Length: 61
Image 1 (cartoon, rainbow, N blue to C red):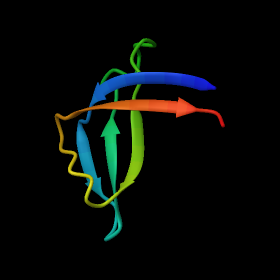
Image 2 (image 1 turned 30 degrees about the horizontal axis):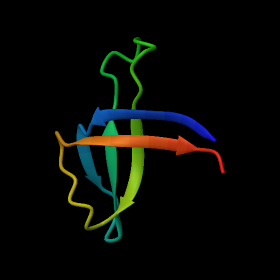
Image 3 (image 1 turned 120 degrees about the horizontal axis):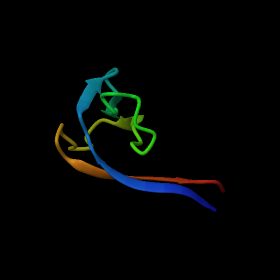
Image 4 (image 1 turned 135 degrees about the horizontal axis):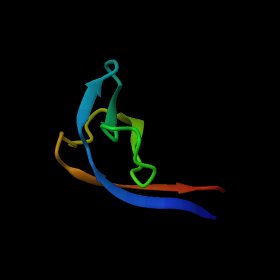
């Protein structure tokens, strides 16, 4: 069952360790209830850079 799907720009890619990075996008005001944001770890080699748009899909399985 799909819970949410949205697109957003990646604001920052953080180096977590030698195996993974963290992709981040946050509402700068944190006060707009319509803006969704994310922090998600991904394996190295993803090729995503700040400014790239990504689609986030959360499903309950």
